[in-house]
Amino acid sequence: MFKTHVHRLALFAYLVTAALVSAQDRGASEILVPGKGWELLGQDYQLTADSAMDRQGNIYFTDAQKDRICKLDLEGKITTWKQGSHGSHGVAFGPDGRLYAGQHDLKRLVAYSMDGAESVVAEGAQTHHLTVTARNHIYFTEAPAHKVWLLDAAGKKRLVHEGLEWPRGLRVSPDQTRLLVADARANRSWSFRIGEDGSLVDGKVAYELETRAGSPEADAGGMVFDTEGFLYVATKFGVQVFDRQGRVTAIIDVASSDGVSNVMFAGPGLRWLYAMEWNKVFRRPVRRTGVDLFGKPAAQR
Image (cartoon, rainbow, N blue to C red; front, top):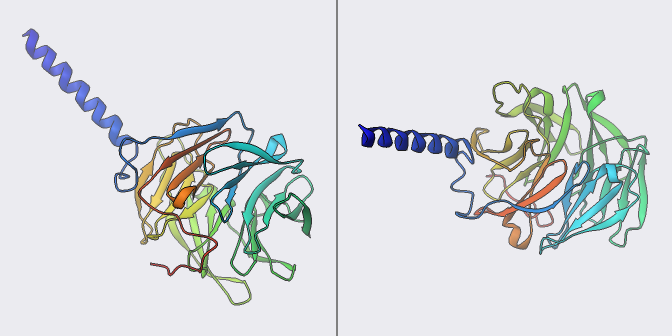
C-alpha cells in the first residue's frame, strides 16, 4: 500500500509538472534554443516604453520616467545614451540613420543624430509609440484621442485613421505595404494597406490576441516580424506569436508578473529576442531571425 501511495504521489507530481511546462512557452519549441532561457540584462528602470535597433544591431530604449534614452550594445551592456529626453516614450530609427522620438512632455517629435544632437521635426504631436517607413514616413498613435497620424517625409502632418479603441504599438510589414496597429484594449491588431500618398486604406482585423481568465485585456504593445513572416506581440501574458494566417501558434513566457511592453529582434545576426517589462530588460537566443529593417523591403510570405 505504501508503494502504491508513493507511485500515486509521483504520478501526481509528474502531471503537475507537465501542466506547468505546457502552460509556459506554449508551442515555442521551434523558436526557442533548448536549454537557453531569458537573461536579465538590467532592471530598476521606470517605464521602458519602447525601443529601436540601429544598423549594427544595438538597441536604444526609453526609460521615460527617468527622462533618458539608454543604449544596449551587442554584448548586453546598457549605458545612458541621452539624458534629458523630455519624457520620450516611442522611438524608431529612420532610413536616414537618425533616431526619431516622441517627446511626450513637450508634445513634439524630434530626430537625434548619433552624436545626440536634437532636431524638432513636428510640434503638437503627443504620442507613446511611432514607427518610420523606408520612405521616411512617420506613423504615430494618439491613444486617448483614438487617432493614428502620419508625418510625411516633407514634414506635413495629417490624420490617417480615427476610431480604434486604444491604438498603441505600430509596425510596418516587411514588404513595406501595410501598417499594423495594435488596438490594446480591444485585444486586436489591425492591418492597413499603405497608399501611395501614405494614407491608410482597407483596414481589417488581422490578429486576435489571447487573454486569460480574470484579465480581459492582453494589453498589446510592441510588435516585430521574423524572416518567416511570423509576428511577435508583447502582451500582459508574454510574447504571443502569430503565423501568416493570423493564428496564435506560440506564447513565450517571460519571467515577469507585469507583462511585456515591447519585443524585438536585435544583437548579432538578429538571432536574439529581446523583451522589456516596465522596469526590466531580458534577452534570449532563438532559432528564428529578425527582419533587417535597414535592408531592402522583404517580400511578404
